[in-house]
Length: 239
Image (tube, rainbow, N blue to C red):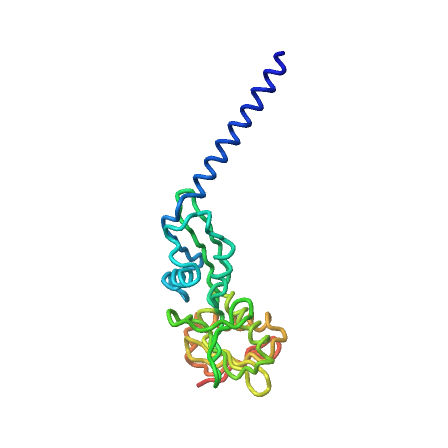
């Protein structure tokens, strides 16, 4: 008999818990969106503004504030925001207190292309990214690069982006008629004859060794051209 009583109590307990859970869940769904909180995960240099995000949501879904939480389809909101060319990834969620949150990762440019027809960025994934009216990224300018050679220019720009020293120093990447790369510097206004991407790591190592020496000796301003093409040496031309 005691065994049956235990079973009955267990069933009643489970039933009460299920009822309370369902009741709470139903009340939560009937709640309305109280506010919208947009957060940019990778910095405040905004290629897309908070206002643009809100406008994009309103244009597609109307005013989200005061809408019932049960009517909000999070995946649909995410897809709408991802359609913006400045956004790489987004996570939309609802909090218990009724706030609609959007955590947005902007795309990351690593170089800028200016050709006769159009100007655009190359992002960290190697894709085209439009310029922004809100912010101009401080990245190297690509010039002379043909469309079918953009992959090599991207590889070089990516190496520069992930190197803290080169990122501060290199302001231009030019490809000449021989399809060899020439770099332009911020400090000293030198021309670096980089050549092809063969032995690229060795060339960067040589360049850093050269800079360490001339910055220590304070002789950087004496040089106009820094040639990295020759193996195991840096050939310089003075001004």
